[in-house]
Length: 282
Image (cartoon, rainbow, N blue to C red; front, side, top):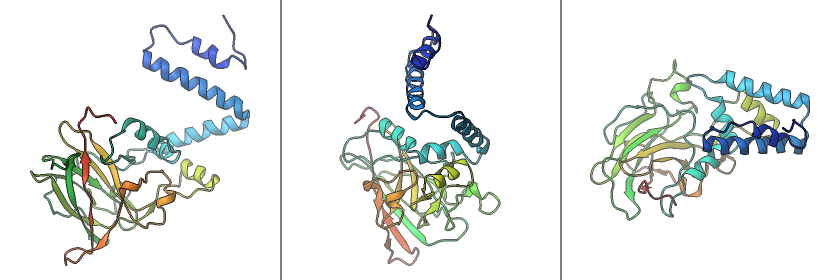
């Protein structure tokens, strides 16, 4: 029996793990305890600082609700969400890259007809989004579901303003035909700050960081037997591309929006999604 000491703190804690503990859970918790204790020793955290950390986490949890997930914002702004995503979604060259899902996705958005508009409030600069869903060889993928969502011209998602925006505003799902093509009308996205009136916003301010995200459209692409794609397309030349507060930008996802010659929309953006089979890991 070894009692707790500064030198052997992590070892003593980890020896208390029961013999019947799930192997994977044991691995995760053992490493967590080792790294957490090493961190505390390295910075020699004070009682007051540890109390402040506990208060921060408590307030973060209290800020969470059905429509707001402050812990996701914390994970995003510390780069953890992107790191977890990178580790779990390695793909071969040429496949569309993943990025963070974000806290504003809503399941079961309405299935709309190709070419239909997702903007229900009639605001913003209209944009035609189009392209194809293909495999690594360029073959079209039929019956792919493209789930899309974006903010409105003021930088808010519908779930953030349930009393101001129509339900399902700037959201929809589209299913590809045999040609793999998709098209819908939305608005040209705008930059917006993540909610910064809570603990995460206070943390960013103390770190001298801004809360802004570059303008983007969200896409979740799924098809039977293929790995799902969770990604954004970002508006080229946005001032926040190089300082996205959640680190979600990748070069391959930056898209050039061009003025549309057609009369029905002001902008046009084209992007092809390249999917890979479930069994391909990298």
